[in-house]
Length: 179
Picture 1: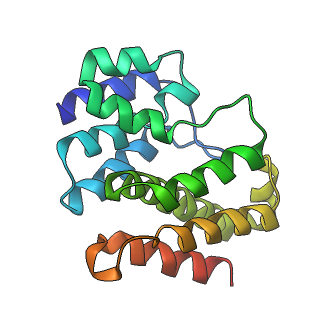
Picture 2: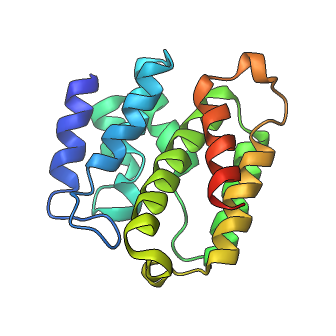
Picture 3: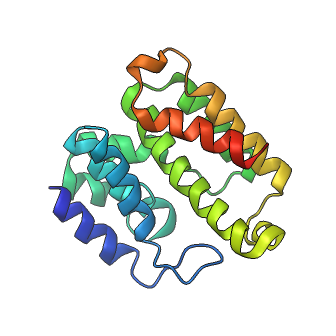
């Protein structure tokens, strides 16, 4: 099922590029899935990692995810999908609440996604500096608020010992980049 999800994501994101980059977009969900796989997460969660941006960024709907990958994967993708009719702040505040109140699978999907996003931002920042912020619908200060809030709220209801290692990696990356 994981290989099927990888093929589906590759097809769905065909022609899309990462913000401010020539990198194929699909490399992002693949890296998210690899982070989840390395942490020993379930097949359904790894598939959700591959498919997490499908509904937001392609013509495919949650029904397509359910038909191809089942209800569990659909539900994980659904809880991670932003409502693009809302403002940037509303969408990010919802994600922060979701990571705070979500179970370990939900937290893991969000944190793996945000870790990869932040690593990409950091790489681009090291290459082009403050120009990176022109590719986003938000400022450096807003991005700092968002990533720091996720880092703070992801620990609600869990201990460091219970969390996958990439949670600590995310916390360290946030501290380093937004110092």
